[in-house]
Length: 359
Image 1 (cartoon, rainbow, N blue to C red):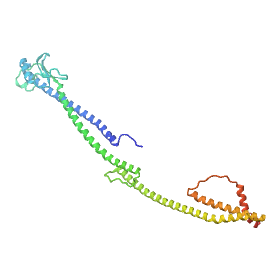
Image 2: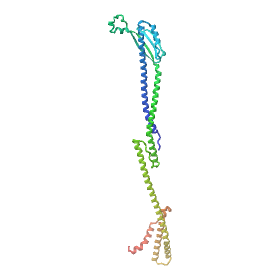
Image 3: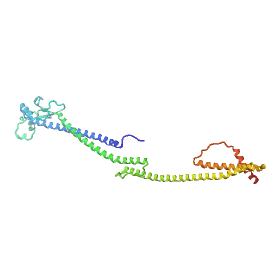
Image 4: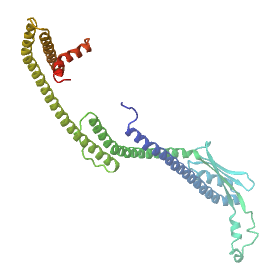
């Protein structure tokens, strides 16, 4: 019975590709997420650095109230495509300068706040001020001059995100191809010996016991299985030769027995014919003797001799029939038989002999 189903190659490929595919997807998701997080953090870090530079640049203008100059500096200096908007607020929270980038209405954004510190505060806290002769009142100014609000557009990460995804998919595809090639090589290393074993067993089932599998560079259990199949093939071939020799000997013995049986049948047929001829003469003479003038005793003797001769002729005919029956040329037909008649004939044949012995 031939069973249908998935082949060993298909099952091995599925067994190798499915776990590796899930592992590959997990690794791609992890590294892609990490790359995207790094890209976002890098963009935020650049935004914080830019906000710090703008805050440093705005210190003097906020301290002197030169808001027009501050507006010009911001408009000329901010030209990054990932900057959506820059605003400078005074210490009361009023916008004193503002500049918008190319992406004015981003879908995703991140707001960075950077305070603008008064440099004179740092100067007043400097120990050198004690010996510089500077007046404490000259440095007695507010610590916070204002604040810089920098809005960065996270939409600029879309291009980088797409590039990261494309690179990850390309790397994943290459890894899948490598895994596929590796799995196919492993499957071929296993399936090729199994196919040879299957072919060898098929030939053994068909009666071709003399075939041996070629030596293959296979170790382990597959190698042991190949050796076992070759050993089985050799044993079956040896048993087949012995069985054929035994069958040939039996065939010769059968022919000798048939020849001997035929010779025996011919001999019995010949002897039956040879015995019938004189016996028919004896029966004929006894029948003629009964027609002559005989005393009652002589007639009884002649009748007994005639019946004995006829019984002997019947037995000789039976021997001939047995020889013909042994050769399949005669069929048996059941006929009625009187047992008392047979017993009387035997008794009459041996009565004189028994009386002579006194029995």
